[in-house]
Length: 150
Image (tube, rainbow, N blue to C red):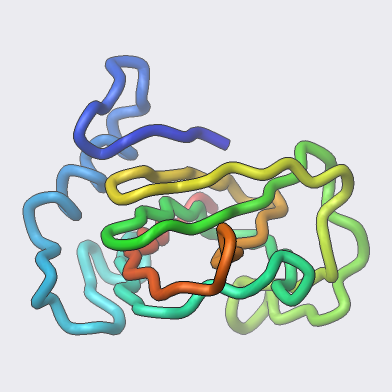
């Protein structure tokens, strides 16, 4: 897991992650339509969404097998949990078809709060629980960059 802010990218950030974040900064505006936006076919693409956060206990944890996530908050505030331990057996396993599996929660979850411009990177296998409310549920606009790692 890596965490940072798109307006202050650190020099140690891997080049392919830096390039993907710079692409978001250059191409995503408040008017960008929701949905999937290709960067490099199925190897690299963005999902632009507007959702409402939910209480932590109502959100499932998830992990991916093939794609890295760069989750960027464009508007609003989002709590996110993560686990440093391996994923257990998923309750819902869509890894083969959709590269996502769901768990009730990660082991020994830790929490971060992301504000506008903040990003977090989850590598394949890293358990995370996005869209958690910080206080009351609230709207959030975000971009998730999916980068094929296999």
